[in-house]
Length: 205
Ligand SMILES: CSCCC(=O)C(=O)COP(=O)(O)O
Ligand SMILES: [Zn+2]
Image (cartoon, rainbow, N blue to C red; front, side, top):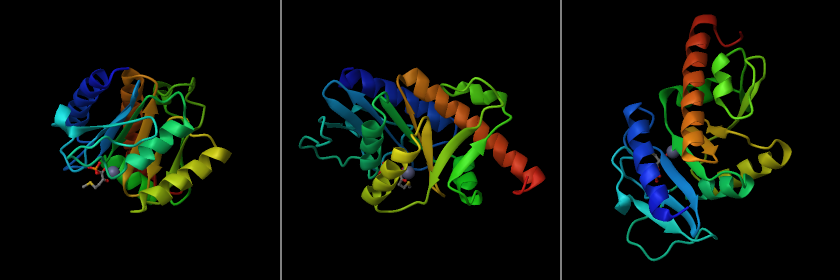
């Protein structure tokens, strides 16, 4: 895919994601794999108001061409996910209330969801009886170290849809812009439901 096509898709996705309140302030970052490497959002911008000047182009090795803007502080995590999941062509990172709070109250290493019909919005899930497991990693300001942790974990349990970073947010992957948006919307719906459920029945249930 051409860089300009990917940038247009991510600008559009950013407006949609921002309208839903999943990228407050300057939170979140987005990227796509392209035929010359990757495009990633520049650091520190409102992701609901992106323009072509708020994207950085990287080559296949993840190196950027000389440019005034700084790539997302979390670029390394995006590049790791592309390396780990060859079918992934898009990575969206969001900071919703539900993802932030749920990843803090769940003390284990994964959020395991079952019993929800909407699990079927995730690629490969065909029943509410399946368990949809999203790994949770402790947040770390050292993104290289966090990326290594995610990569190590993937060797044992392959990441399918995305990962949660505790108290921070969600990273979701997809083959197409349609798939990554569907998976993001599905996961955010499930997180909101699970948060409501835990408020009603408590953490042990
Ligand atoms: C105020 S958000 C803190 C940084 C962060 O977690 C994020 O997603 C945005 O960082 P970026 O460098 O991509 O703008
Ligand atoms: Zn973030």
